[in-house]
Image (cartoon, rainbow, N blue to C red):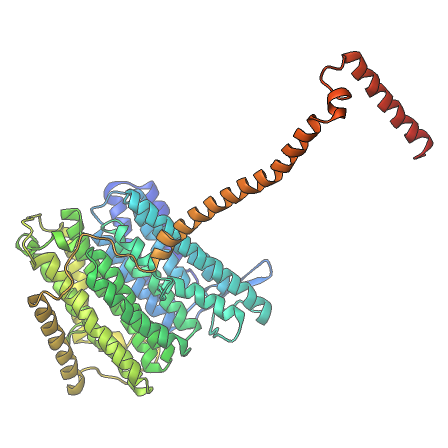
Length: 566
């Protein structure tokens, strides 16, 4: 029983959902993550390695240690909360996709070899795009196609890297890989696409805001966190990741501040938070790695809470455009309060979950003498408070009363948000429970006077800056516009370039044909006026004469064949 991979339970549940109806289906959706978590806790040890030989390749569906177990518990928890939030949805394809998606994430974190990882890597892509296409709008269909292209491309790089790694080292084991060879770089690009590295991130900000109200909650929990796990497993201590992580933490702030779609703001914020995790993995010390993993755990909860709050707004209002919202606290007070809890958590406010996880990465950065990068991360922390801690709840629920008075979110949505909010507070108040699950030994306590006061000062002056900028009319207004970043390359530049290239090639082909035909026309015209054409090849020749000359030509050819070539 201990060798039964937990993803099997999710895949079986997907078949059961397909065959069930009504209340039975809802019970399956809620029971599956609970049963999977109990199975992991009761039957799976921290040092299990189950291998299978397929076509002379040694594969492993179950490789367990404290790192994989923590992410497994996290994904079961995220699946449970997301299923509650989506309980009112009666859409078979989304329900099955949610189970396959979560099961694939579990399969990836327990994968002991690169081929098994690749299989679940691709299943993550195929199952997750369903949440975007289920919105059934033209924009969602197009965004889903672009999303799928990026995800499949990531799988292609992973498979290529796995094959090169096997050819070089004679092993497919998924352990530390590093950047010493071509295989390492190929696999890093694969992980980087799913982690939303700079210039490889637009699938996230393009696709997530177009998903269904409940689908975005699932999307925010699994794909990027599987990639963070893979980076922690394969590239811990690679200094390049420190600089990539710092860039990820900083650049989304500028886009999020000017973005009007609040779910798109959260998509940029997701990249920002993953940046802290990537930087921690790049530092590679026990404190930094624990901080990266702990922040992944916290982010799934508080980012899920914020996406759920905006999902509730989308469900009741039909959009999440900050320019057309405001005043919703009057009719959606519970959603407002729960959203504020998520905002305080992502802002790393003391006594909330973000504070006890993000501080580990920041402290490790100072300890390893990355003080100049620490300043950039401090700026990123202030930016998070601006665009996620303040902008999201302010423009959705308080600013410029829109006159909208929708109903409060459905009860299942409120229950899911309530569970996430409770976890944000419990982890923030009692971080030792989270610390006990971390893979490496923890010798850290976040609530020292210096750190608490420094964080409170940062938050206070960030809030003061927001208020001052608003009063002075300097804060970027919420405009009804779509902002493009690197996706501008393939949504604007490449289509225009392809179009112009086709026109150029078409004109070049026509010019080449014309240049080739013109001399032939000239020769034909000249020949048609010649003595031979007029008097010996003339159309006025009688048919009998033409038959005679053809016969002569044929006889000549036969004589040559008989007496010359033989």
